Length: 617
Ligand SMILES: [Zn+2]
Image (cartoon, rainbow, N blue to C red):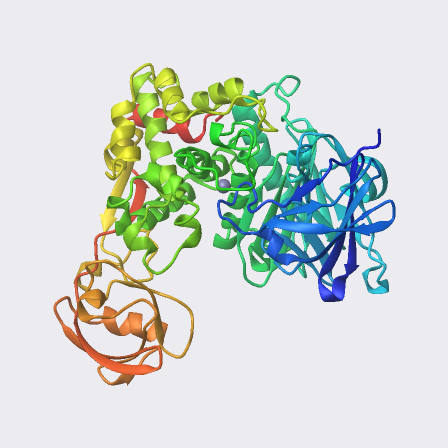
């Protein structure tokens, strides 16, 4: 019997429209088809069916009725065995890593935003045909994807036009596709071919990128599979980084053998550039993060995602482990691979701690609840988020670090979180389609206790189910790493470094500032701060301090020149209404963290630190 077949065509790139045709052999009576409301890895209901412009059905060449039964389900008036063909025009103008995009320069799409699932037959094998655009202006386009080719005219090492084979709908949703004239960088890591396709107007040092990516990928493969590449092969046949470089943007989404990335073109390493810029560090950190997900969440999955139910939210309290542990290992992987220095690693750690401390919501929301409510909170952030929430990425990564150190201490350095990850992979890692065993709620905590040989429930009660700060200072001291806390230099201070000497004497409004050059735009007014006490709100635009016009930069400077306790007169706009308030400035909160190597610590501390940050010397 012929299999279910999808055909996708960039039908009108100028109008951003794909045509997607779905052929269903032997349809059921009143066959239903449905579209996911979310995409795995991005925990928000996005309702991709909003962008289905027209949807029609035919059987034996004749149009038949197709009724919508809810926001994302269609039911066809089928009769008899003849193939049901459902055809949709899909509007694609979302340049994030989560949906689909098409214009005359390139196309990209994710399965959940374009391919309808056949109800009752989601686990059947199917085929997908990717057709080239007919538009002359798209001549020379190539294909990049990790879909399995069946009958494909290859346009390069990463794919081509033609027919691909997919084991089931879950897999169809897990291979994003890029179309266009991207550059390709190829390398080998973990015993399998890897490539990065880079779309966008950019110039970059391909050799440097290749060397750094290989080092990071090898590091993660080694963590899970050991040094022997004969047995320690990466769990996918090949891996593809799909990178879109733009003027301004940031994001990544993990898949089983690929990832979609969005970055600033200035984050890529320019030819001739040798230093590790902040932008490039953040880009390789993003690559490292998404690559680690190949194991942690794409194979080791929570039971709540085994399998994914893409028609409604899937709740779990374990995102701290799937995102937080991944966030811990993204930078740790960079330092272990030698891509960044230990000093840079400690600076990044200081910035993460500062971000956590800056959110007073961390004392109101337990980390476990942040995960459960990701759908309506973390993914739908607003001006009150820092005052009411905690991030399972940042605090999750600190809990992961604290768990790692706690396990090392409990086992005399013989075991670590690395062993927990290997244990989880051995136990749950065969779950790529989500049809096997997922990690039950509490399963990661149980694995930590198992490896540590002691009950870590009190640890998780405090930092995961409770709202206490992780005591990193005390935990890292035996590693010869000292944690320092100092007042923020100003409201834009990100921490990570020692800071200015006289910071404590400076004043602050305790706000976060957004963009805009017609004044100082308040994006967050922190709880208990001077701005909040004065009656200022997020969204307000401060236009003058003591009668002098200000921008973001000059506001920071003028407030920073004043002393705590000083009173300033502010002019601000709320909507189109000008108002004036007096604010009594405060001392900046002591929330900027930085870490430094303690050179006087005993040799034993250095040895411990090396086993943690340089396990392979
Ligand atoms: Zn992630």
